[in-house]
Length: 138
Image (cartoon, rainbow, N blue to C red; front, side, top):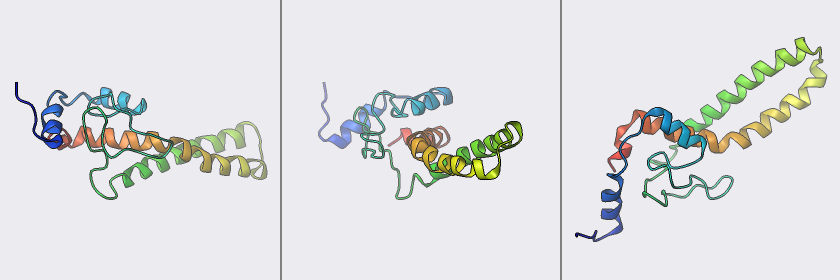
């Protein structure tokens, strides 16, 4: 049996066991904050800290500098949609004034993106793996 001569060769031979999964699997792995290629390695070691590579399959998470900028758009978009839904419901449905709503909705705009940060990054990685098959060729 041949053994790899270097960790890089090991990573190349290891990833071949992980064919590109369907989009549903990629999204499920992202929502569980797991590696989109193997589904085993953790995407985060802390609340905001990502390792450079998957601990299980050696998949490189940050493809290029600024790679996760797109995840900010996901985070912003979801926050905006929640705000656009919450405001009319609370203002017109519950007759709350703008002065009553402002601090709560401002707080939502600060706290929710911090909570959703990890999920936005994971979903961005999953979408990239879905639309760029070269992620499975490294």
